[in-house]
Image 1 (cartoon, rainbow, N blue to C red):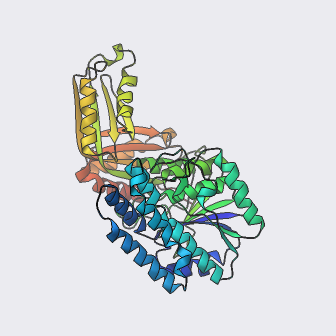
Image 2: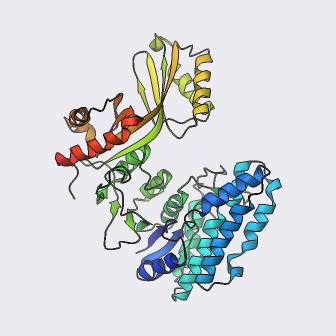
Image 3: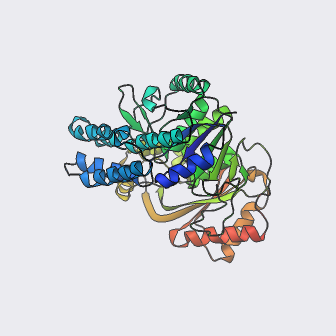
Length: 453
């Protein structure tokens, strides 16, 4: 059996954490053959900030000094020579700030060095523990589509990466693969979305046909609701990938959204668990949502969203109207979370978009000659709440029960829709968003409506 394990920034943040992870997890699990480390907590933010400052003509060296200081301290504590961390690698990339065409490209040249250094430190500690270890750097075969800051691994990369890593495994190495980045065809670093080490783990697991992917975090697993909003939210013991995907689309941040597809493609189960509470099994994710309704799986939400609504009488009489609307969003680089249409209205819910960009899209819609709308309105500060369960669309009375819970708590529902076969979503004013999440969680617990395991 081969397991790929990903360790987040908190579990690998300093020397004490590195040693603990190696002694208590990696050394004790002979099946954990491939390890994907993130950068220590906070390091990627510092490197990104430094790169942005440098590219804009500012100094940026304060952040670099802080990064170097943290790594030097950790190296000292694990008795590792500084030469092994190859500090010159980052220094060389920083000096080349004038050789990059865009800021995103320069940021991507700097940001992955946290993962690269942490991989070297993890290998050092594993070697001290007597483990035969090799580092497989992404530039050895993890070729991407070249989109800086939002790269995806090309399909043809999987076979080469899989072959290379399997060769190392056959030589009895434990293999470390730094997370968060790959390279384009020219060899330039290209990072994945934030949380991209999750995606790295999924790609590697797919490439080597792993039996299991384990994601070690500072939380016990996927919760039935956001624990920062619902303090007593319980851990979901078992869910399928369709449910995880729905929760991720709405707002759950436990697993990076792009990490789901490579695991589904090979039917590889994923376990999310706490690095500090190994006696807890965490959340096991596998399979799809083909089974019937067995209870509510969880509640997910996303704050600070926009409702963008276009109204025009007689929309149905204009051929290609919807295509023109969504093409305008695409032309401005805006993606939407959900859409809801009425007889003369098209409405989308937007998130992770700057307000000036939303206003730019609104102005473009108003002046589009094909659309010629009567009005385009934007409402900010909305919260999307999704209730997720397999087979939800076939279960009578669930929507009515959820509306009843919110009514009892005096929460006004601005929009209600079936988000897909496994979810119902609500839009409420952000001022009542967290109140609504807590009300739904408490109400569903009182009705004993959550899935049993």
